[in-house]
Length: 278
Image (cartoon, rainbow, N blue to C red; front, side, top):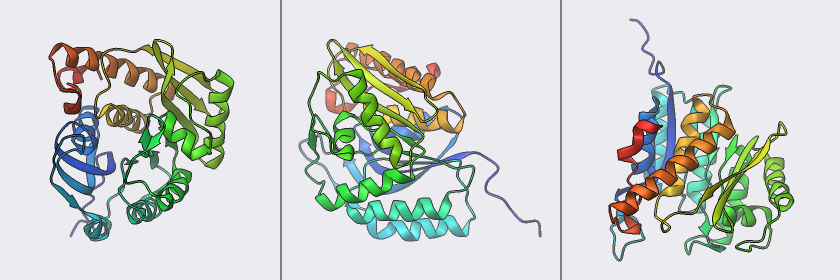
């Protein structure tokens, strides 16, 4: 009998939660990565009826199932061109992700870590000191790292401030992160007057700050949209700086459209309308 291969299509394993409503995490990653001509293989960490930004939600922790889920992938002989991680809810989940990367990473695999830890200078309430320490281990596996400014400060033990950063300070923080292992880093959401800056840093010497005018109000899930585009472009071998520029432009266009539709901020952004632009 001819041996069957399940690896004739390029694919990305996306390790994150699933929210049935409120566009974020896997709910965002799956359509974006699929549209960018890659198979998205979700590994759920938890299931939500809707994300925690709403007044009430149903939640089911998937930690106890993750290793069995992974074992079945291994038995199928699955291989991944990309592994992308998002929000992780416990120290054990972070450790499971580390195990997954060690088990499935090959020379063709790119690991994209979005170290979802906090925002606006504050860690999320669920984030413990043990989780911080474990996340610092996880980022050492990354080829690409996509922290926001808050997460960058916590990962580099740098005091947070909302604005007033010099270009040199931002590049120095990115360099500290690269010393841990990542070849490519983008620090998102740096306030620069009426603009938001995205600090691009590569170990090959490429450095730049991609700025975009701030539009509308903050919305849920924009970080997941950003990381999904970066992950897909990485596997598609798109230049990193160009990929960041594309993601910034796409999110800005989505924010403007979403504001026009009077969508509540917790409902995320209307990216579906603009997918052809990716």
